[in-house]
Image 1 (tube, one colour):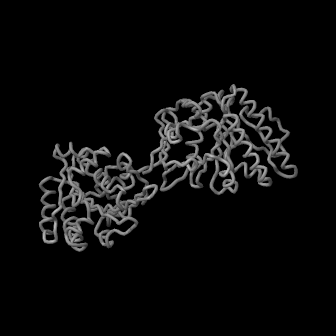
Image 2 (image 1 turned 180 degrees about the vertical axis):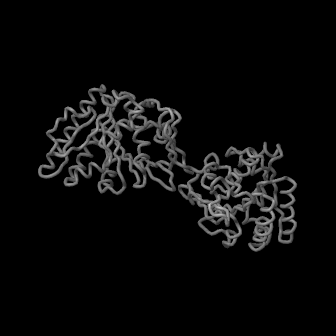
Image 3 (image 1 turned 135 degrees about the vertical axis):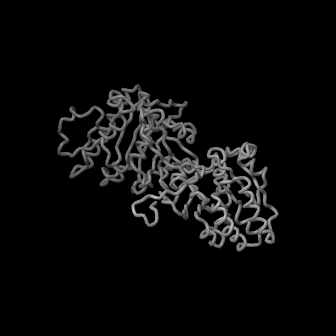
Amino acid sequence: MRAPGEPGKEYSIDRVSTGINDLDALLSGGYPRGSLILVSGNPGTGKTILSASFLYDGAKNKGENGIYLSFSEGRKSFFDNMKTVGLNFDSLDKAGSFHFLEMFTASREGMGRLTADIIESIRKFGAKRLVIDSYSVMAQATGGQFEARQVLHTVLSKIVRNMGCTTLVIAEQPSGDTRIGDASEEFVADGVLNLKFSIPRELEIRKMRGTRLKSRKAIYTIDDGFRVLTTNLPTPTKIQRWKPIPDSGQLISTGSRDFDTILGGGFPKGAYFVFEVATDVQISEMRLITKAISLNFINQGRGTMIVPTGGIDSKEIRDGWMPYTTEEEFDSLVRIQEPVPSSKAKGPWKSLPPYLIPVMLAEGSGGETKIDVSSQSFDSAYDELKARTGNKPILRNIGYDNLEASYARFPEKLLNEIGTAIVQTKTRGDLTMGLARPNLSLLPKVLSMVDWHIKFTKKDGLLMLQGVKPYTNLYAVDSDASSGYPVMNLTILI
């Protein structure tokens, strides 16, 4: 931010950490010091946990004393509830860095006494952080919205700011309502955070004075504390060979222990599942799942058959997977179908890489025959790979967009092929993953044929995964590369 009247000169505002690192990142480092922040939301959205995290971080890690001023919840209830999310205020209270004030007896006639008590408590305790819970109850206790606004305007927005005490005021919203009081409180406040009781939960930064916002919305969870969730796809600093997760009985691992857990241990042998990927999810993000499943097969000496999604060729797949396996294993265990124009169909195929299955495009006359030949080539490669691997399960990774384009003139034939593949997958104990964008015309018909349907979506920059058939909860998707290869982690969104 530039200083007023000084073009070109950067002006830095002193920041106070929110206690949540990823929220700090959205707010250019945290709340402006000495500011008044309104934290609003329906009951159960996590307002108390967010506000308490702010006080806890200040007292425990930043050397800043904090006060929690409550008009409703008692001291014991607050301490007990916060322990369930890992915030031990008992220790801070004993250390003298945190103070809990109960204000159950406030009244309209005692407004002057109330404001004096707040100011005196801040001065006496040397508090640099204050939470008032809640504006709504304070308004009822002091006689109405007008009196409560006077506290906000005269005491908090002026006196407390001059004392350098950053203040969070919790504002309750009736269930289903989006308004905060009569809206005048938003004008008094320097910042407004609104927590939405939705699936997934969404935090909206309605305003934050003096702050250049990277984004106004973020997904969060209150499972095991208040956490703003982001998707990071780090590159391993030191690449290692993928360490596979073995089967658990008749269940095939996805290559992610978190994913295995929500599926009840993995996919059953013989499963044909459709992986529906939203249009705004990038191919590099989608690979977090598809690559894990494939590498988990390859590094156990199992074969993988691939019909790539549109725009992806065999070289790109090989280059992306090679750091986590060996050239010998890739060439021996991976087979990728790649179309070639019919004019080149008589070319020197023997000189092509061993992992490539060249197929003819179904163009011009005789397209149906060319499709049959291509299908037979794929089946022959499957039989060879099955024999090579000692009849171990084979993974088939199928990009539906390529199939739909190839079978554009023969849609019924395509559905018959998929139906046959579903039966073959089950009887042979293999695993098939069909990749589809939601706009594909064949998707609804295919979904009516399968028992497994998983969605991969994106909101506010966060990747999310959810089982549709069978149904699962919604999960945030992240990646951990500390082992030397990308591993998908899942966090339940509640």
